Amino acid sequence: MSLVPILLALLPVTALIAFGLVLKRLPGFRNPEFWSGAERLAYYCLLPVLLFTSVAEVDVAHVPLARLAAALVIPTVIVSLGIVLARRVIARDLPAFTSVLQGGIRFNTYIGLSLAGSLFGSEGSAVAAIVAAILVPTVNVISSLGFEFLRTGPTSLLALIKAIVTNPLVLGCVAGAAANITGLGLPDVAATVLDPLAAASLPIGLLCVGAGLQTFSMRAHARAIIASTLIKLLVLPGLSLTALAILDIPTVPALVGLIFQSIATASSGYVMARQLGGDAKLMAALIAGQTVVMLLTLPIVLLIGQSVLG
Image 1 (cartoon, rainbow, N blue to C red):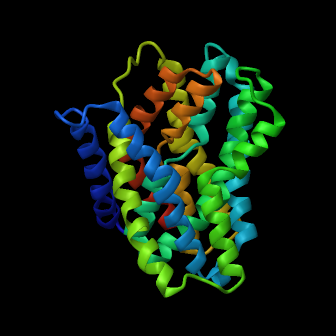
Image 2 (image 1 turned 180 degrees about the horizontal axis):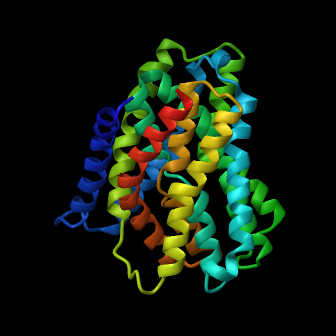
């Protein structure tokens, strides 16, 4: 894999995000309720369907699930603990800390799935669904614990468990895994309905990513923005690449996992910050800033990953 395929894979992702950014500013598309509805459709319906169909059909025989999970979860936990230890340095208060934590470990599922499919075809899409199934619960647990133990929001253990087991992405992955394990797979009749829905998830999701980008003041949050962006786009990928190499993960699953660990944080972090008392303005700045910087760092990270992982 050279620089050209990476840039070509980034091109449609970047174009759709930019189109969403422009579209929201055009007459007829400025209503926040329109984008809120589109985001809900993508997150609660289309993306879970995509994850379900991908996991239901994937052949996991060539994917070392336990080692892959360890190579992705362990670096995420290490980075999270590092942010906790350094919170007084990189965040001015506890609400800001929760946003730095989310910005340091969350990932935009739409971007990850789109890039994995563009670079590695159907195998990449299937493996990306597995990676999402591993990381979505992980980052949601850690993010929720950040709010819980630092008491910046009215969560509880029961609420945390409920949030995880009712997460639409988790449900999509679990349902797909059940269909895969039982041998049911995806019947042809079901595929005729679900495949078009799955195909719509990524373009609609990426348009919503672009529409959700907001301008921000670098001066107001410089230290937190720089720290969280460096952690998410360089430190976490570096630790993950090391773990993937040490645990000898096959090339395609390893590179797909590296993609997810190297992409910008997710817009769902803004919703969580707003609901649980975090710094929502800082979270919005992290989403916008990381999305732009990612376009520069991701090709470099993937080229290094290719040379290390083969």
